[in-house]
Amino acid sequence: MNREVQAKSIYGGQAVIEGVMIRGRHVYTVAARHPDGVIKTIVRDVPNWSTNRFRQIPFIRGILVLSESLVVGMRALSYSAQVSVGEEDDDEPIPAWTMALTLSFSLGLGIALFFVLPLLLTHGFIDKFTESSVLSNTGEGVLRLAIFFAYLGLIGFMPSIRRVFGYHAAEHMAVHAHEASLNLNSTNLRLFPAAHPRCGTAFLLTVMIVSIIIFVFLGTPDLPLRIASRIVLIPVIAGIAYEVIRFNARHSSNVLVRMGTIPSLALQSLTTRKPDEGQIEVAIAAMNAAIDGDNARST
Image (cartoon, rainbow, N blue to C red; front, side, top):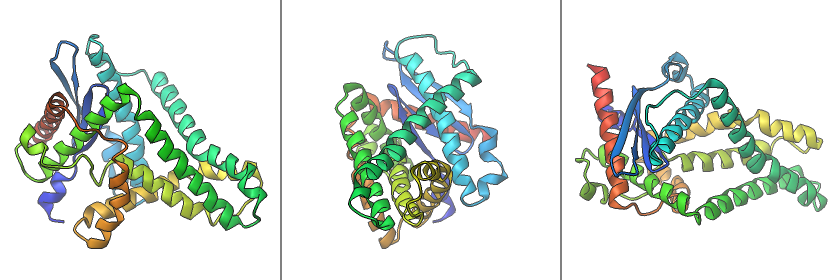
């Protein structure tokens, strides 16, 4: 991957409430639709700790990126929520205790649903029919994937989430267009698919697959120890998953890598919807603001 492509591939983001967040090298931006139809946009510096020298250390950087994504994502969601209901959009910082409480609850719920629940189901059912630790841990992984797919499928029936999925697709299309060096307009964005190889959905699927590989070697100790191992190893799994995604991005022209990304691209059919013109307009506003913000801080 040449330097120009690498520079363009630093942009990524997420869908928020009636808006899009785009993260660049130096800044992240949030563009959200106000009830009066106006697009409100903010530009903020990325957290300093996410750009330090530890960002260059393999596996450690994956944990930093995940932590940064959670913090920035929470701030972006808070801002977009305010704008979407017409409240004052002064982007006041979220109090540290509120941030910590919200992140703790969200992480706890995710761990309970996607790590503890599959293990409890495995312990209560699969382990009754086999003494093989390999079969037990593999079955747990299959259950984890099933719960993950079911979760994504079910929330897609919620109208508000379907709106978010539309913004999700628009964000991907804006990134695609920028990486292709095309002008950011609706016509050019619609040339590209709603899925993107570096999507967070791809990261989550990679986490699920890596967890199966790691847990299969842990045997079947007592249930409390098994639960503890799942929780303690989450940062390790996240670090490995990030390196896999990073490797795929750097070798995207390789045929085998392209084949390996097919499942994650297919999965994004559950987390994206065809965006309308208004959603594309918001994604373009967020991307342009991120590019301009990076350029301003690079001069």
